[in-house]
Image (tube, rainbow, N blue to C red; front, side):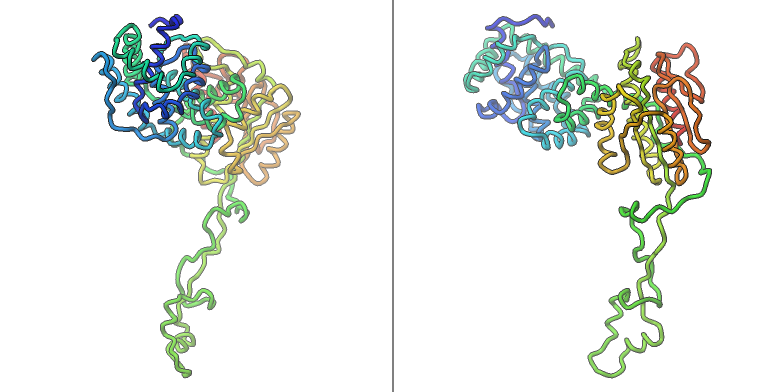
Length: 473
């Protein structure tokens, strides 16, 4: 479909006709007035607009509206009615069943009201991007704003008239809805972690460049995670276990009642034993059982929770400033892939080592990586909120290694240097690896360097991620 700007009259009829095809929440003037801010924000987000009814449907679905039973399509050509039905079945129904939709709804619900149109616009753009949709129409922004400023009842009247006239605007709508239905059937997924992450942090992502970097880092993490198995057996501990501090394990059950015995204090007495007490002042059965040691008491398990301590440090070296380049054959810059690798490893290690006292540390070494530091704080926000991760700065690599050596006194400590070219000397008790990204092919040192010659560049990143994960276990 051509993306040349539509003429004023044709654009107005196309916009209004698409608005009349909204499937969720009805097409009353009040409902349309609520959706106008979403439409204006979407036009600022996308160079070519989809039918406006699609924006309304996706916005209402993202704000928690239920998927309604099929509503009648306005009077128009049979081909458009069939295309809209296919769009309902393959896009709206599938999107309503997406497991991440609930997280998207919650993120938009927590968002300030004035920011929700921007959130809806972002979501619409991301869904259309995942579909590979190219059937939009280019409309002059000023013209679209003037049209949408008209009273909603007038917009709906113009749209219904255009649908009945069955002109060129209707043919464009047929192509758009057919394209949406077909793309939805072929798409592997409609919503991913990138959408959820960005919506949860949209208030903090003021610039488009920063938002795009966050989206791509999460996408890279999802793609790299495909190289990692769901489960992986950790290596046998090289040293004994250390009892964790009680205050560190307050969230775990410990010291509770574990059994019943004939020995204990009165505060732990089994309450059913009180039935042996009588009102008479004389000797009763309760007294006899007490003297004979036959009363039952709850006993407590006073053992400590024993878990292995693990400290994993990711050090972002100044050399990463040279990795802000995109190599042929890769979807993302090397620096974005490094951030995605950190996120994917944190996610999987949290699952694989969930029974251990696991802490992550991201250290930005030197200057020039302020943007990467901010993105790490957003990417690891979940672990930061739980106290399982921290993002700090250091002036030298030696400072990072010294902190790891201190951690190694009471835990297993591993350090991954990202962006260097040589492995510096480190204490023997610290596991040290270096990921060299100065060249298109990443090299993991001191492990094996890369995939065999002839492998695609993307395969080398997947292989390095898997090899690094095995080393950290």
